[in-house]
Amino acid sequence: MAVVVYLYTVIAFNFFRKFYTKEEDEEKEENCKDMLTCFKFHMYSGIRAGGGIGDELESPNGDALELYRIVFDITFFFFIIVILLAIIQGLIIDAFGDLREQLDSVKETLESKCFICGIGQDYFDKEPHGFETHTSAEHNFANYMFFLTHLLNKPDTEHTGQESYVWEMYQSRRWDFFPVGDCFRRQYEPGGGGATSTES
Image (cartoon, rainbow, N blue to C red; front, side, top):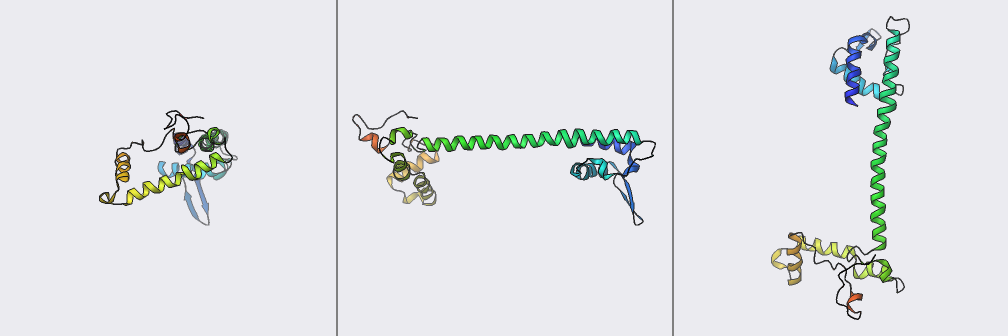
């Protein structure tokens, strides 16, 4: 957008500079006295104006450049206010739409699978409230986060054997201490002891 506005600034500075001068109470306001001032005026006032830069300039009625000013004002409004701003708004909306889809996907996954072990809800719901009990008691995500926070704040020399094991894995960014594909219920099933695959 800045490139297009700059092109209009160059045209305005070379051909329409006189329309950028306003006189109020014997005070002259020159909004296009140099390229930098002219560019800032287009970026700040021109883009904010609902009808484009023409709303901020002196009327060209009766001027020799009237026709050219009309073309200048209309094209500025069309290309910058209508098209470019619409594209930017569309990109922003699409970005938020993608984030919303990702959030919905994560939410759906958390509602259908255990975050810790990855076992599906269908497996636990063979018993009433099985999945809810599993995710709130056996594999409560908050408990795991509390344990990791506990390790982060506890001196290494005071770790127990189990804490040292988890801490070493955490430092090397290995997550094998999470019981992926396993839970207490599976361990007590015939032939149990920990499944290696997850159910969805």
